[in-house]
Length: 522
Image (cartoon, rainbow, N blue to C red; front, top):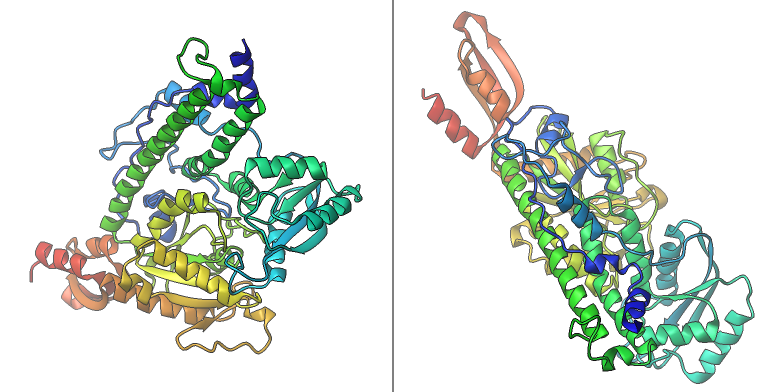
């Protein structure tokens, strides 16, 4: 009986561990002719890069007809049990307590040695940690401590004397209800010892960031990626709970007749859960690859907008597209799901702007791994626009973090070399002028510098996609003009009545022009 009780105690929210996920076949989008208008272009490729259309924060986009369909247009029903089992993977207990929390922010500062963070200062690390806490509803920082340490890798992080001083200060402050220790991960024994000493819950950077990711994930793929990133935390909890039971789980030979110890059972269930999440993610990636192929056949240029979290990517996309549905939020990781927004360039060419997850220095490793697949979509872009917040004191360090992450994705050299760098929020830096050549200074909020940016984007997109501007003479009675409206961007039509023809100025790709000449020789 102890094993049944232990299974419940150690696996609270462990109902998911006993569920089996039978894969849901991913929906496929019907092939549609490419529409000439931005909103139709977006509808035609919705989801094509694993994205959702519309609002900041990754509001889940659905098909215009509200249905899933096969590539040949036939309905593909989804089994209700499969849907329920897949949703079961996404049901987890809260990582952080609900309600108001008054947080003491403790930042261990390593002044020398291998543990010292290079290229930044403690005050800016604290500012970013404070921003993470303030992102959580009802949470506020009531006290901040920057505490020197020589032993960041030891069990309790701080030396004995420093720890005693910290304990006295935290215990002596009744307004403190929890502590955010600004380290990447706390070992479970360390967390428990500190909580016992300080008598309040203690959270690390991994747990806080993971909880923010949970709150902001909207699409099923993003939610599954968060669930995958959470597995190391669950594994540490299982080991800790077994140890808490006095090792009985390890020494017990059988658990409910299974022939497994309690620890072995929990570890196997977690392995099964990981395999099911990976399988569900692969189904969604297959769907994304299929729709990405359709998007490339339709030849809609894609511009991926990347940058450090809260640099103003979403505000910039809203300014470029005029999409009133986009609602930027001034907080970290407001965008977690890739979202697509259609816009027109000065030549009337329709492009898709992809709003991506923001980067963060010292992002926990398992979160980087989980979201690397999402960021791989950047590799299929025609152009990358790197947005920087030049009003931030550590803008250079943020730039280095973003570029390092992009290189880690193995992007093509040509894509990285053609990247357009945009310095945003210049309205907060009076008299700002970029020191680097070929860098554009803008204020997305005030609309400054946007014409120059759109012209630069258009030039780069035309070069990247092999498009060119041509004037073609077509017969008014034939299908050529209709074909050009479908397959190219028509800029102007000059009708010549006496000839029964028209001169059509178009932006057209080399491949589409080749098809035009093949279909309409002469």
